[in-house]
Amino acid sequence: MRYRMVGEVPQSGILVGAPHTSNWDFVTMLLVMWHDGAHPRVLVKKQLFKGPLGWVIRAFGGVPLDRENPGTVVRELVDEAGSGEPFRLILAAEGTRSKAEFWKSGFLRLSRETGLPVTLAFFDPPTRTMGFGPTFHASDDVRADMDIVREFYKDKHGIRPRNATPPRLREEA
Image (cartoon, rainbow, N blue to C red):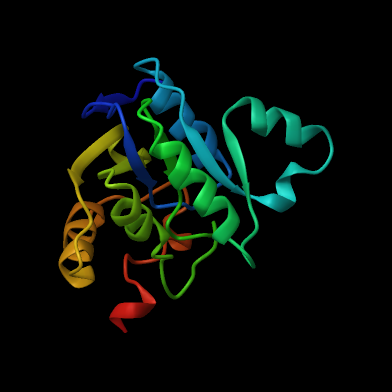
């Protein structure tokens, strides 16, 4: 693809893929992870698991997320993360490929509950780079955590920049 890889694939952690602006983001993040042989779990809305696409998504590590009732999946992931095995979970904190008002805060909650770090991942077509940025443990200071996120993603564009949601949480509004 003639893209330059930057950063290192973490052995364990919550990986935030952003900006999430296209269906290709899922494929791209898997390619980034597989670059170093990692086999991540990926949160995907449950509606995509219907029909033959469902078994394909599961085969690639997809975990169906019921957006109306995410608690069950989150508890299962927290248990899995605590197993002692390497655990990598990719999610799109924007929660949609369309422009939204806020990011979802689940990645910070998962980090706090599991003790796993958050690693910021990206795909930036204008610079032809993809990979991983800073890694941090979520704190109780949501604004400080999001300042790290905002600083990193300020110059990342995604495939369809007009669809990107600026990194901010409802809790910050």
